[in-house]
Image 1 (cartoon, rainbow, N blue to C red):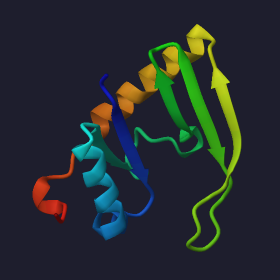
Image 2: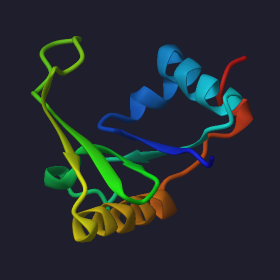
Image 3: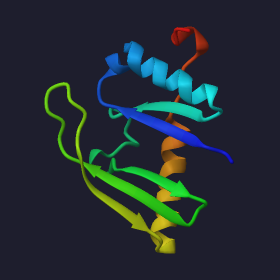
Image 4: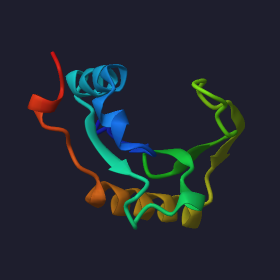
Length: 112
């Protein structure tokens, strides 16, 4: 199974955060293809940044988060499973657009 993940970040300093870099490295060690993409990229429309996973091209699992407070992670306020074929195709297309814009971090950038 091919698994790809894009981390979309809002602040460039995230790419220097040791906790984030450790998560990135762990994903790679599990065989997951990983890329990063900043909100400043024109392909990322802030209103369309919803966390979603497409399973087998037939189901979109989506979560909507509340605004984060201070240094706490945001709470998930809504979770949806969508099987409508047109919706899932749109999510697949959206992911491919973001994937093309994303970048891999070089091994020199990730501490061992």
